Length: 159
Image (tube, rainbow, N blue to C red):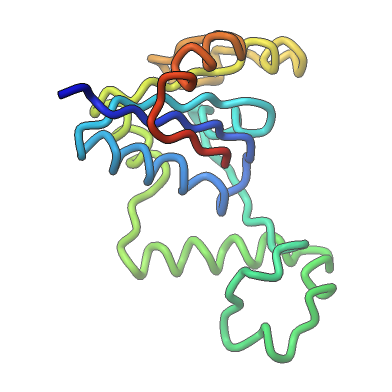
């Protein structure tokens, strides 16, 4: 039986968008899938040694608000100065209270499960990023490298 493959493109660099690629890929790897994640543009933030990610409440009407705020707090209010930090703090507390693994733990789990983490070389060059700021064990490659794997994958996700 041929091994199933999962290809993920991670393009977002915020706390709320960081969890899906790592949760899905670690789960797929545990189920026996061969998995690759291609991190491009802002998704490269997820590969930094020191993560300091924020939640993106603005423009995200589907985000559940604490204390029933979605009923009485206007979406526009999330644009107020300091709201992103407040929402990030609240999200981190909720995750800790519910025992959700940290991003660092999930990322490490992915590496232990042999999920290939590929950093987009074009984006690294475009934004003059220092690869010393990134975790070890990455592959640096372009989109063509991603398509080699994605073209044969059973599932391909854009996150």
